[in-house]
Image: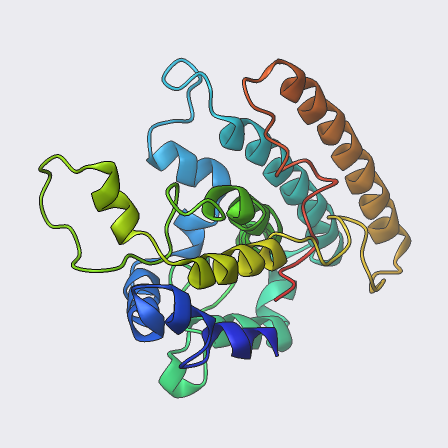
Length: 269
């Protein structure tokens, strides 16, 4: 229901964003053609690709410092479970359900698949070792939790003050850099009705609607080894939470979004 209100033609996006729903879909499609799971969802690799992993290069970067810690915890948790259930590579090639799932990830949408690029594994053989499975699962979990928290929960703070991040602009779009007056700027900003619409939507989107990472709504794993892995995962998240809280005591501005207590298990909308 919420997605229909936000994303439908004539819905919230069309009402308050200059780009509109058609333009938004065009941007998403353009980005998806370049997006790769093994590059863009591997947090350390993605940060490294932008040249900002080294604190000497960029000393103050809370997203890097917090997200890498949580990503590593997820990776370790997934590794323990996958390696427990797939002790030999031969078990992977014989697991038809696992291989069919990978096939659905890479199939084009015309073929009924997700058309995700960069899925680890061989195009013909599928998953061939545990590390490919671990990287894929870690990336998906990180996308639905860490990445989502980083971009979603800041929306109210970033966008509810129109001059900071206007969703729409009135009048002719500015196409040059000549000096403008305060009057020129105010004339470009959205009216009160649109602003209230934006503030309400940003407040809704920035609200946490699921349990915290690791505090699963439904329990699916009952194997003693899996239960122990989950227990250690939760404990590690608590340690990371304490580290982040201490970091925030000395940061210029507290960066709370990637505290495991804040990170959700999954996207709620």
